[in-house]
Length: 84
Image (cartoon, rainbow, N blue to C red; front, side, top):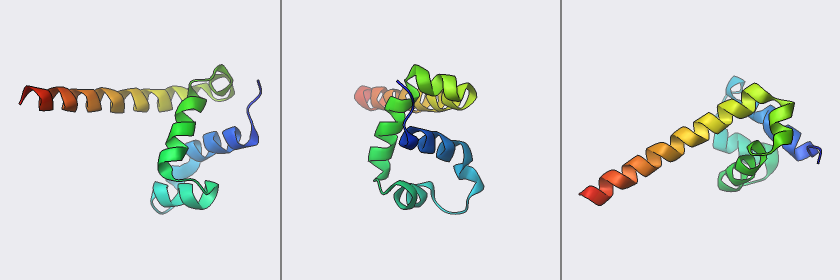
């Protein structure tokens, strides 16, 4: 299944957003008319597709690593909280 225009826009935004001034959450709302939570939910699904990986392998791998690192940190914090 080919990437949609929105999928391509998400990937382009992730590749370029640091070059623009302002908070990322504000840019997400302005660019896509989505809440940041919904955007990240859709982005998470997108970066798990082979089509996204084929389109921009370096970006998708970086986004996957960032997501996996955040998940691991979250789990570690939960584990520490459970021990207390």
